[in-house]
Structure formats: C-alpha cells, structure tokens
Length: 185
View 1 (cartoon, rainbow, N blue to C red):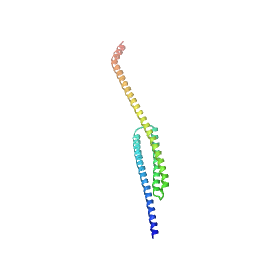
View 2: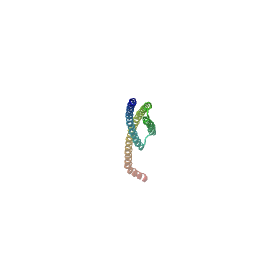
View 3: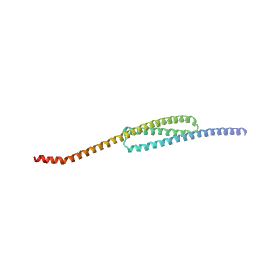
View 4: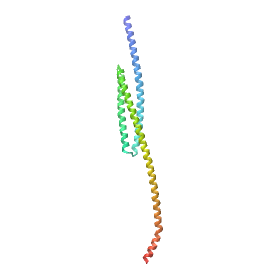
C-alpha cells in the first residue's frame, strides 16, 4: 500500500508540475493574445480612420494616381489583416493542444514577423499620406493663387469694359452731331 501511495503522490506531484507549466504557458498566451488584440484594435482604428479619409476623398475630386494609391494601400492592409487573423487563429488552436510549446514558438515567430511587416506597411503608408497631403496643400495653394489671378483679371476686364462703354457713350453724341452735319453737307 505504501508503494502505491508513493506512486500516487509522485504522479500527483508530476501532474501538479505539468499543470503549473500549462498554467504558465496559458498565462503567456493570454498576455501575448492581449498584446496582439491591442495591436489589432489599433490597426482597426487606423483602418477606420483611413476609411473615413477615403470617404472624404471620394467626395472631393482628386487625381487618379492618389485614388489608385489609396486603393492599393487598402487592399494591402486587407491582405495583411487576413494573414494576421489566420495566424492568431492558429495560435489559439495550438494553445488548445497538449504540447503547444513547439508549435507555439513557431507561431509566435510568424506573428512577430507579420507584426514587423505590418509596422513597415503602416510606416510606408504614413509616408505616402504625408506626401499626398503635401501635394494637396500645394495644389490648394496654387488653386487659390490662380483664383486670385482670375479675380484680378476679371476686375481689370470689367474696369476696361466700363471705361470703353463710358468713352463710347460720351463720344456718341459727338459722332451723331458730326454725322448729321456731314450728311447735310
């Protein structure tokens, strides 16, 4: 009986150790998924802001190049997000298995790699957005300058027209009286 009691205690001890290991692995997974969830939320918020900017851009006439670059960015973000969701799903599935440490490490590396790719894509997009905003500001400034020139030329044209009409009205009686005197003679 002591032999079986000792084996039962040893088995219980090993089970407790395994449970602690699984518990610590689960805690690590929870921390990592929480971190990833925060990143996903930040990316969703970023994507929502991009969609809002796209909606504003759709209401304004923009160049085809700008529209094309925004569509390319959006499709790239959708592709990255779908890969990211797939990796998170695999990570969650791996955490439910008995021995998640080997596969978990592989998935963590893949997720870190994807997070790096997403960061680079976001940085590139922010650069593009800044360039596009600078182009828009330059075009708006040029547009306001052209509008100002157009206003000045309109004013000059109207002023010239008024001067011509005032000269023609002041000369009309003279011409008519000279015309009459010429016709009489």
